[in-house]
Amino acid sequence: MFTKIIPLLIFIACYILFIFLPKRRTIIAVLGAILLILLQSLSLKQAFYAINWNVMGIFVGTLVVADIFMESRVPAYIAEIIVDKAKNTAWSILLICALTGFISAFVENVATVLIVAPIALSLAKKLKISPVNMMIGIAISSNLQGAATLIGDPPSMLLGGFAKMNFMDFFFYKGRPSIFFAVELGAIASFFILYYIFRGHKEKAQIVPVEKVRSWVPTVFLVSLIILLAVSSFFDTGFSYMAGMICAVFGIISMAWKKLINKVPVMYGIKSLDWETTFFLMAVFILVGSITISGWIGIIANFLSGLVGSNIFLGYTLLVFMAMFLSAFIDNVPFLVAMLPVAISMAAQLNIHPSLFLFGLLIGASLGGNITPIGASANIVTCGLLKKEGYEVRFKDFVKIGLPFTIAAVTAAYLFTWFVWK
Image (cartoon, rainbow, N blue to C red; front, side):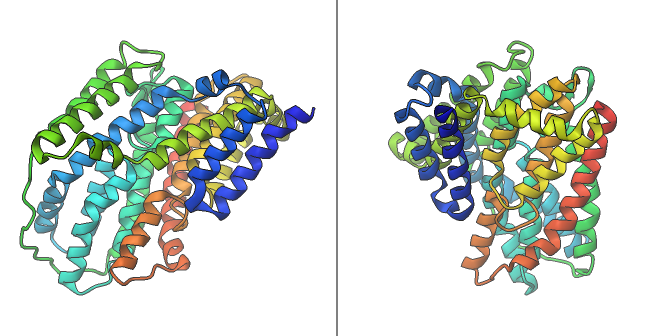
């Protein structure tokens, strides 16, 4: 029994430390994974297979492509055109948020914020207004749409890995509208919240175009990657290896192109990758693998199933809103990795297809991070950018926008998913 308790104690200790020491989360996760192996809670072979290498390939590959796409200045160039064409500042802000959401469906959220932020800051300076609300709108828009596609954000990649869902499955799955449409309905609902917040900005913004596209090649890479991922869906139906390999190959091609154009050494490109998040993800897979192997996932699933009995709607509602609330304060990646197998196990015990619980879990976990400034990496980066500009984002200022936005988006997506997948 003691050997069974060790993985659970290490797992709980790591998650508590993630909350109180968010900047040390990678070190904590890696040390936890090493400790599990040293205490023989799982073998090196089990630890290796606990890591979803397909998801890791997608994550690292898309990060590299997103990096060169950002440097190409194409998104910033498009954002300037939008601002110039919009009839007033309110619509400029709303369209910038919409552009952020569109980019975020294919590019990791933090990268998306870094792409769009300079335009928002430039607009605020020209109009002599505070950029705080606008930047919060950009952050929460990126978090929302990141859940819409397989490559939008790590939580989507994790869902794809666990449920064996390919790129096209995010649009239509087993003949029914999938998670993409739930997220888009949430986006429409939350758009009205953003409109209400920014409706007072009636002035017209005049931006002198300063962005010049450095190269259209990264855009071609990104579009080609999306097309190939969609095509691969028909061949690798079990989502076992092909998507990860395609993303990894595109990552290598992007690095080679960057070296050729910018004369940057390959080692510099490798070093500049987000290794911190990469190792964090790998270590979290091992942490969750240990409690799965030791049987705790089954025990948690049994407890939750006992709590809801045969009431599927109650189980679904509990998962969605528990995920939403917890993700407002803790990182949604380790939370989702831990809860996905629980959701699958609960669905099996209730004798229903797991899609209802899995989609609900992704909606709650991805969108719940929008409630607070610490709920998602994109929020933390946004607050950091504003601080650099001399603006302090208070907790209540973020919640004032994030909470109604999240409630509107989650409620719409939650109801859509229930009626389609119940």
